[in-house]
Length: 308
Image (cartoon, rainbow, N blue to C red; front, side):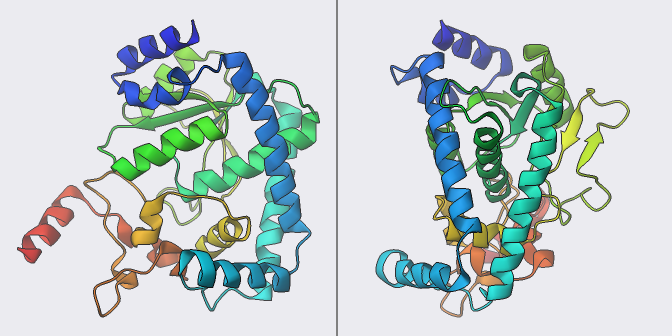
């Protein structure tokens, strides 16, 4: 029954059935997925608290070992005890935000906007950890999630999104649409939703004046936007992902620092070495340069033409 609902949803939204394969191809029922999600919440809780209880020295030794023996990628020289403490503080603050959210809303009333990007990944892992801490349940947990997009995506994005939706056990609704119409569609499909968790940060467009909790503007579908990683920096996002050994989309290791549509995303020029090779995204130190990976269709065409 669940797989038929997913196919119907794909037809309704115009989204490729590719996005539902994680649930269709497995023999898992929705109930078994929810039990799996509860286990994942427990695992994320362990991972988050291991990081909170770790020292910089232990973390750096492990990162250095993985760099030399596994990934053959450099460890940034700005990974310092100060960054370790600041990231731990950000995690605690985000956990506190989630504690207040879970005191206010039931899980049926919440959804998380998840596109597989680095910021969404951080907020998802901490969200799942907070769910485990709040409910202390090994029974079924259903975590609503939504992905609204109207741009052509990279295959690597699609593959990572499909993989993580399955591995984190999300009740995932993809909608191919612009944001406003997409949220309207989503709230029609999920009328119990009252608040949606979003991975926006201060450096993002329209992020400068946002609050952690803020109702949508006039003319938009009515729900509360929750922004638990609003104050995180690029360095803190990447330090958390690396310190917790969290898998992320492979495009970031190819020099992309901010992922949008395929026609509006390029490798960050500041990460290009003299030999033409690009450093991974986590080597970028300055928040203000992260979105150099985003360009307009016209700008990308111009860059393409200049190479010809």
